[in-house]
Length: 115
Image (cartoon, rainbow, N blue to C red; front, side):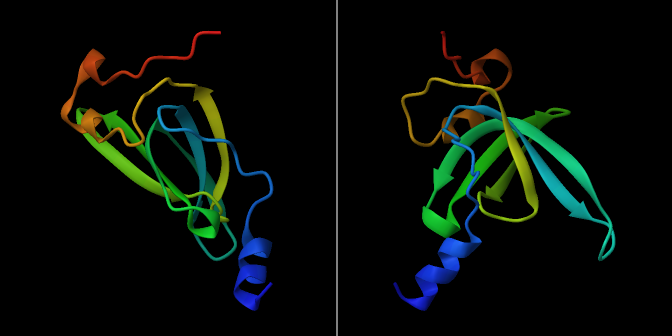
């Protein structure tokens, strides 16, 4: 194993959540006020995309606030991402849900997983 692989293995989170496209998640992010002081900000929305793999894996979360769509891209193994809660599992037939950008209201919903 070369040095680059060893560094990336040590930087990866062991407790990375099993996130799928279509899931509704709450992402707890650390926002640093000063060098040693931080607060937790929660961003809740639907996962519309997952990209890459390994240490550089990211997922995109979309929500609509005050009629404006907001999308944030979060690295899975970033230390500022404190935790990811899965609120609801979604059932989708696509790898990327970019078509949700053009929809509003009930048309932008993702079907839930029935147990």
